[in-house]
Length: 313
Image (cartoon, rainbow, N blue to C red; front, side, top):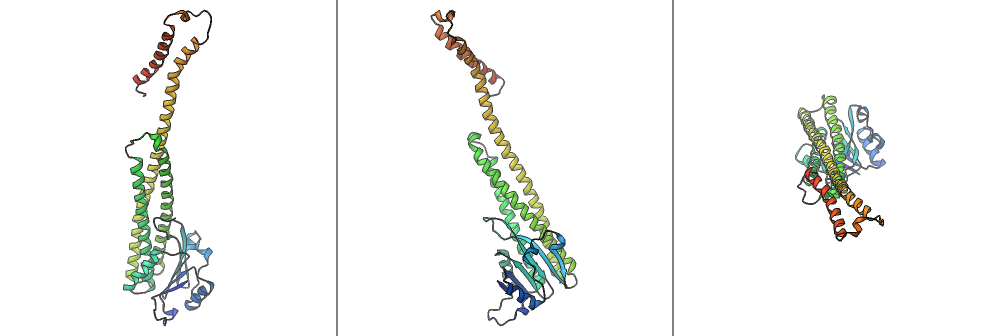
């Protein structure tokens, strides 16, 4: 789909008069139409996935060719980076993407009250993308707040009842960490684009647009610091959840160990008197049965009292 801005409801404006052309999953005909109209090359799909900085940022015939992996999903959806292309020339700004994005729609609405100039459209799109990523980071921060509240809350139940919940929280924080790493990479790419544009288009880039791009870089720097702080929180929460699970398992092992130690003396007494030899004097005692029971109970209580004295239980 090819969308040209500023829009022309009457359909009388030529494509060459457009200042921002948004290509969404374009067909070969739409690609050729743009290239013939503006004399600029539309990047191939495999070029958008390059990871080298020299491949992501290029200058061809006075136009800036830039790519970045953008996250188009909202907070409740799957966050997958989508390779997106940007071509900024003096006469036109072109975006190439394969998915819908609320940030691009918001940028188009913001431009209604501004000038539909290529550099202005580029700066507006970057600002909206940074705002969108900031919202995603805020959502990730709230998710970690919820996880922190559940992990560090006062345990009203035994820890064994909370193990399943803690495992789910570890998976949840792990997904959040993965999302933040994707956001961090996207922010770094957008920062490179803003700085690259200021450096290589300084001859024809308006001063106010350059200042806006510098402000975008400053915002990205603050978001990067915020994301790094969230990553540290993720590590803390995962370590805390792992430690609590280990405590739970240690408590279970401690109970089993105490039970086995307490049970050894009574089993020994019962084994001695269960040998059923003919000449065992206790068999002839009037109170022999009660004596055996008392001996078993006493030998079980002594280890318990000793564990209690050592404050192990």
